[in-house]
Amino acid sequence: MKRFTLLLLLALSLLTPAARAADAPARRPNIVFFIADDMSIKDSAAYGPTNIPGPNMEALARKGMIFDRAYATSPSCAPSRAALLTGCYNVRNGVMWNQQRANAAIKKWPAYFQA
Image (cartoon, rainbow, N blue to C red; front, side, top):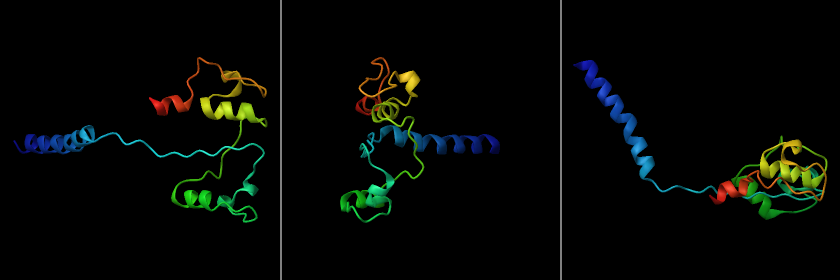
């Protein structure tokens, strides 16, 4: 009987937080994504250099998250953006050169957020 009572209490304790989480309204994340052409880590005050002031970006970086180990899949801007937006390498998303569009059949991350 003790074992049954212990298992019952354990099961109830596991179900209670899950029930509360299911009743809670879904919270959307606040995501601000900056992307710029011809910009390096040396051009953003959020990463240390102060020759180009950016107080709003610095404030967002202090309160949020910055990436210090991010890499591009291509040295060109359109293929790099396409890889970011699709999560696929350029061979897969179809953007190998500038002035190309990603394969329309591949869902981009803004569509996931919109849903």
